[in-house]
Length: 137
Image 1 (tube, one colour):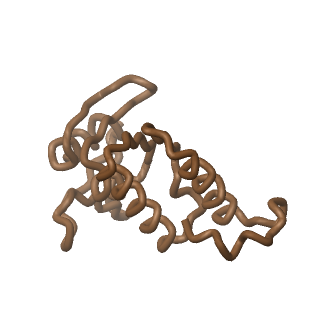
Image 2 (cartoon, rainbow, N blue to C red):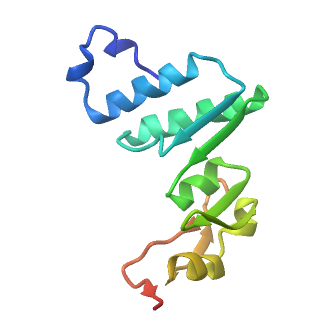
């Protein structure tokens, strides 16, 4: 998690993203078979978000179980092979990103209509949060 440069920094002096990276590194160094992270990309600059997701992918390839809570649907669809969508703590749907990130599901769960298009490189679903999104009441 690229924290070597922080090794001589007093914990109280760490900024939000630095603190987040240190916490994630402390979790990873435990080398457990199951890793649970809740909003791990919060406070992280984009370069560290990408680094984190690459680390999670590498751990998955080592047969680790990775459970991540994300609110960014485009990020979830890019990096996660299986999604479970919750609403008020109840399971509303599950499946692969192309199966679960749809306009109908966005309308049902989030009361909004927004276009879903494939990302240019990965081909995974991308939610286009535009100003002209229509909220459904």
